Image (cartoon, rainbow, N blue to C red):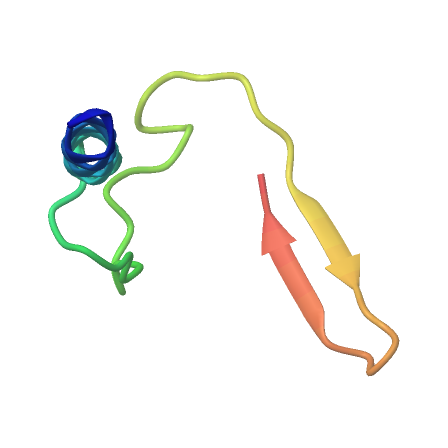
Length: 63
């Protein structure tokens, strides 16, 4: 009897864990958007441009 309860408790816990992990997500997997929703300038937020370069010579621009 205790084994059945434990098994059901674990099932309930796993269901809750999966449910909470999907809260706030539109999908199961994250797919980044191709367009910006806004920039710091449009939102009147203080920012500074940052440029990072990796070992291969690729430059990444961010705020």
